[in-house]
Image (cartoon, rainbow, N blue to C red; front, side, top):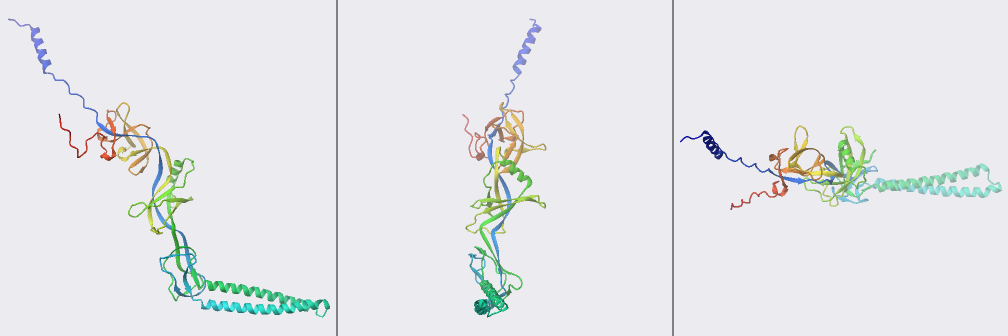
Length: 387
């Protein structure tokens, strides 16, 4: 039986068709964790370094010459205004006061005598029993004696004031420092000898500085709006925040040419007196509020030689790169003011699987879940058994 060539070709084509396999299905798009960004008003915070200073500081000095007899306070203790801190030997000052009082008494006696003589001359003048010259001399003597009385009173007042300075008192409320002169030393001889210093440490000043660039940033954030007083929070040496907030009370208007910065100062309550002047501290200063910026987790922001950028899942489900401008870090987030739009789905986790131009499945990012997508299995969770 002769087989036709057409039959052989048909059988060969059928066998070849049976040997072909169907192509594998395309893999599903990778699953990524995203955050949907929204514009917000964010406090403009700066991490700075400052130094504490006393609210008021007063030098306690010897204002009269004499020998320092004793110290009347405990070094490092709190003292009140008017409290006696040192005693200078008052004996010479008492003697000077007594001498001034004696001179005043003598001047008063001379004035009394001169006044009697002047009154007699006044009575005799109309009767021509006294010459004009004698009358003038009597009146001049009366005036000189009156002036001597005034000078004597001034000398007594001065001597009494000097005697009061023998008890050296604190000019303000505060904490008295270390004694600078020992007992028995001669003080106030030629100049006002420094005995100690009293510092008022409740409240305290916090002195810090801000660069011109940062100052311009603050002004731009304020945008000409009236702001409440800037808040300052001090961090203690162990990193814990101090429980009371300070307020900015001074901003300089002259730039330091050596540093290119401007000086600022905040007032910080210190009722427990736990903070001490002279201490360097770190602080967080809230100097304004930025309007319509975006907060992104730091893990979402990437950088290359061109700029900072993020990957966004677009409306069509494909990944798009967006270049952004970051302003600063705030906690574990970046503050972004250019490059994003409200509603953008920014990829935070699964960045290694996302490629620009390729599809991706967006799921809400869960920061408490290690950055994994919402429906991803947890570390301790066992996979479900297959049916």
